[in-house]
Length: 246
Image (cartoon, rainbow, N blue to C red; front, side, top):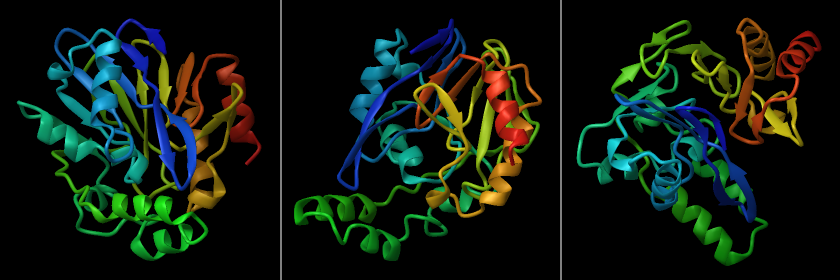
C-alpha cells in the first residue's frame, strides 16, 4: 500500500506453523537510495522482488536493509537477498540483536527446542517443512549498528527509536518526510486498531509496554505494523491511549 511518494508498505503472504497471514515489510526510496525494512520468512526472495518491482522500484537498486529485530519472519530472506544482489547491500540493526542475526547466538524465541515443541501438534508434512526452515542458516553480517536517536540521512531522514521488549534489540523507525512510524512488532493492529505487542511472543512485556510511550513523542500521520498493516485513522489518539493505559 502506497503511503506517500517514496514509501510503501508491501504485502507478503506468510505460511508458518500451519497458519497463513500477511506481513508488511516497508520500502523507502528516492533517486539515491532504495531501503527495505525487514525481509519476510525464508524463501521469499521472489515475492519480495516482485513486490518491490510492483511498487515501481528496480529491485537491482536495493541499497540498504534495516532490520527491526532478530525474529525469523523479519530476517528470513535476508541472506537470500544479499546473495542474489550483484552489488553490496548494507545491513543495519541494533547492537543488542546483532549477534542473533549474525548467527553467533541462537534466536531467543525460535531456538531448536522451542520449535520442536511448537510443531508437535502439526501434521507430519507441515512439521517437516517448519523444521527444515529452521535448519538452514539464516545468518548474515550486520554492516552497521544503529542506536536510539540516530538519524539516518536517507530518503528525507529516518530516526531510529529503540523499542526493546519484544526482543532486546528491537527498534522502530520514524520516516520524517512522510511522518510515518514503522513499528516492527512493537505494536500490532487488527481492523484498523492499534494494540500492544503480543504477550506470547514478547519475553519482556514490561519493557515492551514502556517502549510504547516513546512512540508518542513524534508527529505521526501513519503507522505501519508488520502484523496488521497500514493505520491512518486517529493514530496519535490511539498511541496516546495505548501509552497511558500501561
